[in-house]
Amino acid sequence: MQDWQRFWLDAGIDGCTATLPPAVAASISGGWQALLACVPPTLRLLDVACGRGAILARARAQGFADVCGVDLVVIDGADPAIIGGVDAAQLPFADQSFDIVTSQFGIEYAGLVTAGLEAARVARQHLWLLLHAAEGPIAAQAREQLDQLSWLRGEEDAFALIRAAHVARLQALRDKIVVRAETAENTTLLEGLWHSLGELAPGSAVGLVDELEAYATRLTTMAAAAPTADETQHLRASLEGQGWQVEIRNEGQQPVARWLLATRR
Image (tube, rainbow, N blue to C red; front, side):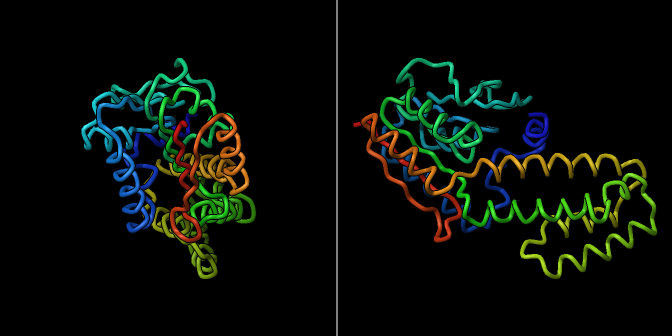
């Protein structure tokens, strides 16, 4: 929780989509806009695992006034409509309290089926979830970067070198990072670290290691939480058994993510 709290303190409201390719982020934004445009803005909306409230802001921009968000993390300075310290698997609301319940890259962290059914419990009409896809490029990049972090932490003992801040040894590490990046599919982490090591100021070494450790924790939880197609179908079957009409739609061909869109019959 501390690592995610640190992330949301520094991240913008679009922290979950800011690092996606612009075309993907635009497609996701358009998807939410289209969904919200299909229902009256007088409906009451809850966003689960809402972060800084990207979906709340989108809903307000389209005329929705009665919106609420919940997140496990308590974020200082967040939207006053957000309630922190709430487990998505145990929502503090009565059955069918909200007309629409949404989540963007969040509900799966609490266990997709458990938290998905809990979200459905408090939804009166619509349940709209945008989920990570375990087989998609976002999860694949997370796994690759975790492998890179494992290499840095283990084989190269990079974290200890950074803490020691020995200039000559850090330059040698930068050279090894360049070689590693030559065969990497995703070089974002390696390039960022290479630049950071070249600009490492006295006294900032510990902070850099802390950032890398926190990033590793977030990647680990994301890679573990990303639902497979079968897990998403499991939630679909459970919802249909409770009387919901459910559509699953891929975001992108690989897919980058997956929409689960349910309407109570």
